[in-house]
Length: 139
Ligand SMILES: O=c1ccn([C@H]2C[C@H](O)[C@@H](CO)O2)c(=O)[nH]1
Ligand SMILES: [Zn+2]
Image 1 (cartoon, rainbow, N blue to C red):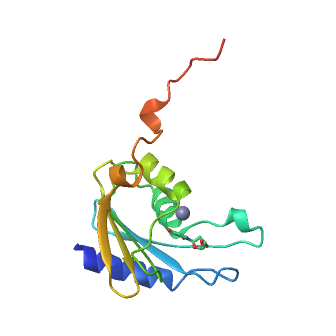
Image 2 (image 1 turned 60 degrees about the vertical axis):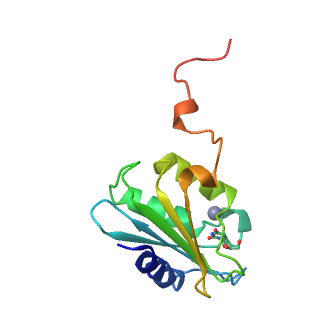
């Protein structure tokens, strides 16, 4: 599936956003290794900080369907921004956790601007699963 098609899926996902507070809809489309697309949208909350972004919704939805860390092929994200949307820090951390460093990230806006990047570029120097040493309790 090409980048434009995945971005079009992200636009479809954006229509499902639950955004009573910000009115700022975001859509995400996650391509898995079987060629299936998992939609994500932002889902806000009256307790604002509990809001889930579109990117995390797509990843968590796919994981809940049984897809595994590191098996995803691409993630497209779209919002009504001046420049292609740029994921928040929390989502970057979750993307690093669940996606390979060289996985493609396609960022877009509603005017058709597109920026392609990678997981590695989105969060350089990330603290990820490889940094955790198991079973070493502090002295
Ligand atoms: O990449 C982004 C940036 C923002 N939002 C959401 C969070 C909140 O609902 C609204 C405004 O920040 O947009 C996303 O879903 N993804
Ligand atoms: Zn986010």
